[in-house]
Length: 304
Image 1 (tube, helix red, strand yellow):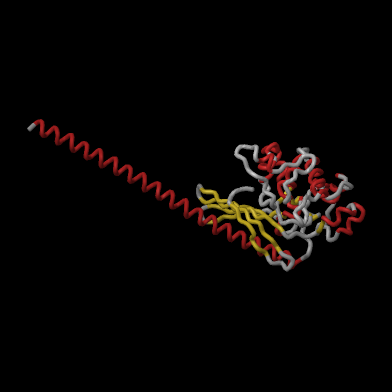
Image 2 (cartoon, one colour):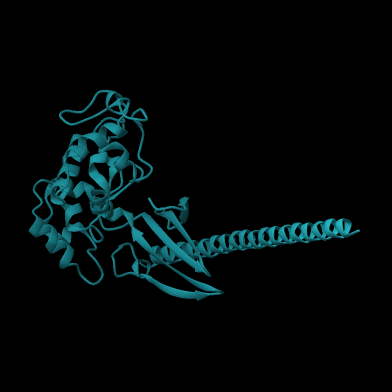
């Protein structure tokens, strides 16, 4: 009887221990399921808030097109959006003018061949930022359609097939400026961070908005452009921006005029939503056509 009582006691203890382990596991899994569900709901909320911000930005750009034909950094669209309260958190963002940057896809002409003048302009931009000018030929080769490396610093399939893992040259337009690091890893994180505010990846043929371009970008338009003149254009800009290139007279070299304008079509919206412990970030490439209509071309949920 004593032995039977002892066995029964041990059995009872094991049953209780097993039940406790099962209960603890179920409780933990229930907690994880709740956290996962909350995370998915938060992401959905973040997406909805971000799309709302995109709709607002599109309306701001449409209104701006109706008000005037000049785009400059003191307009409503260019103002930083201060953090606004939302349920459980806040939302903030900003709109950037991408026409004020050097378009990497302008390194090739309409036929897909390297544009030597644009390559020289990119070299001047790199030189002004104290970066390796070899990147200019490399980037042009990455985009152009031929398989012949540009002289003297170009690279085609032979360069990239020797890497680990091997890959081929894209021979197509750039869709993200982050491709710079793939083409020229020697640029490094520091060099990329220095160059990134001055370049963009847009459809070929875009003009540079003289009102929103930094002096280094203006230098890329002509070898006759001096930094003093470029800086004066940037610093002496009227309150309403430069309305025409003619206002600047001889400060703009003749060969640069075909590359410059005073309006913009391409903008980048950055939105950050903080809800509880979650953070949601969205980047949207917005195109405003000459009629004033605004469309979202690309949305990404990671930085360029």
